[in-house]
Length: 110
Length: 114
Image 1 (tube, rainbow over the protein chains, first blue to last red):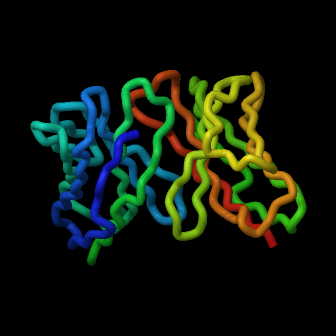
Image 2: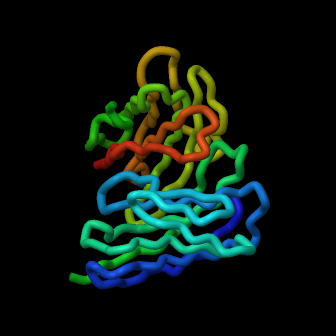
């Protein structure tokens, strides 16, 4: 899997939007951008993925730069339950394993 | 539609004993992955299995660790002669064949070696 770079930690206030950045300058044409999160004492949870176009689902939105060298996970209205480590992962179309990096630890302030 | 089931949730073993961790994938999922997370560290890939086949074991320690996914029954991660350094959370994930969407993870087994 190609390398991604994320900030170690971020803080946000409750009920405000959160933008979690990810740089992936070496992304290849067939790499999908996946986001997972891991809440305390739980297993990772799939959040969203995309290839070129922006994506929305009930959990979050994924904004992908036009050159695909970066992306942003957007939580539209953070709650305390969104406090977790968020992982940005590149996964080639044919790959069958996901490699986790260090992720971004998101703190939500009440 | 149950998710990925791992048991036990917590396991305590004395040094030198064997640990067996079980993972039942989601219904319809034929691929299983095991990950290990040491305290305060990230998730490390261990092994990827399909029914009766080990596809990728590049993350498995060379000794004492083995995994299987039989035709019937759960996937088993087996650790022989456990040592204190094996204390960690072990997560299992499953996916359908060639899943672009992503994996579904279980809640993990927390192994403590005393």
